[in-house]
Amino acid sequence: MTKILSSAIAEGVVLPAERVVDHPAWPTLKDAVETFRPWQSKDGSIDFDAEGAPTRETAAATVDRVIGAIEELAPLLPHDADYHRAVVADLRRWTEEGFGVPDFLDSLLAFQPARTRADGLQHLVVFPMYTQNGNPDRNLEAVVLRMVWPEWLAELERTRYDNALYCGLAFEDFTSGYDTNSAVLFPETIAVREAPERFSWGGIFCDREAARFRRVSEAAVRALGIELPDDIRDMLADQRRCQEAFALWDMVHDRTHSHGDLPFDPFMIKQRQPFWMYGLEELRCDLTAFKEAVKLDAEGVAQARDVQYAVIFDRMFRFPVTGARVRNYDGLGGQLLFAYLHQHDVVRWTDNTLHIDWSRASQVTNQLCGEIEKLYRDGIDRPKLVHWFKAYELVSTYLAPHPGSVWAKGPEALDLSQPPRKLVDDVLPDEFPLSMFYEALGKKLRDVVASTKGITADSDLPAAA
Image (cartoon, rainbow, N blue to C red; front, side, top):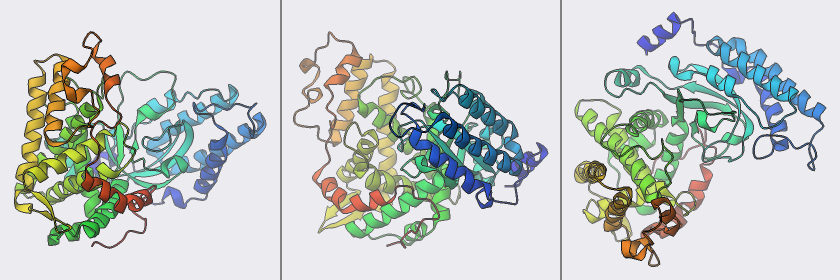
């Protein structure tokens, strides 16, 4: 970590000796935020006429407690001094303006964690925000985090996988919005008067992803009777190894959204598309990370083999049985990977045991990546609707559509006089239902998946199966 850390010190940044969460002002801040959150409406404002609402004086006094705690903690984090001054100013302005819809654009612009990525560097983040895959309302939240940026990862980013905006993160502590399934800190979730021209960072909590992966994978291994090679067994028992694998996976996945042959990233331009298009985009990014991990493994990068195991296990065992079945595009991608491996005889469900041919897993997984990449490359020359149908054809080659699907009947079943975005309304909420295998596995893993809400590296994790 020396190069990154030396750079940070040269810029006047020093890793604090004291953990922010050990300072007495942190529980004060956390308590004040938790007191304030229930008073907020969905958009983050306070309706003082609503039942249970505080007086304006009480709300202002509570925000004063938040401000006082931030000012006590700020000296521990001199690298965030501009941000902490700005967030205090935004909190004061919000109070003075009567707690309408919050606007924290000034403090968002001042918070620039990607400018100094030093392994172990702490940040105290306070914003009104929603937490993706967590709380959909814009509540005031406080989170203490640290950067995960070891030298080997920094070197790969510098030399092969340029991603200046990516921040690998780990939790120290958080308020209720993160006691959820959320594992990201994204600037677009923060309440602002207008979106900036471009976002300059994005953070993913690889500690939560790793802990969740370990717990669900271990349960799946037990339920399915999978015989694990020793290196996978050792990986599942090691939080640090899994965390490093996710940090590398996330970094490559994140940059892939804007790399390769593609007709424009559907997430960046917010297209309204059938949800299988989003599923294929997420799976493409994951399988690109897998493909790169195969290359890195051959070059002796220690974490690369772990990335391959993590992609296969998380995609096959957690994604399909997590979340609702309504437009579950991540679940769809997991189903597709499993079906592809099964139909190419890499996985077999026989005698109530799942057998995995580890000698062919990498080759066949890369083969699926190639099919999706070809779909994208060919898609550049196709109209949007034709591209959607070609994508549907790829998915339905391996997954059975719902018997009531209009899309499965082909273009002649749709009213093609409508614009493509209107035809999205004809997509069923669960266009590709779970197979019998996943229906059974979902019942076995339901409680385990639910238990990962709010999980962190410090959570009590079972030993590897």
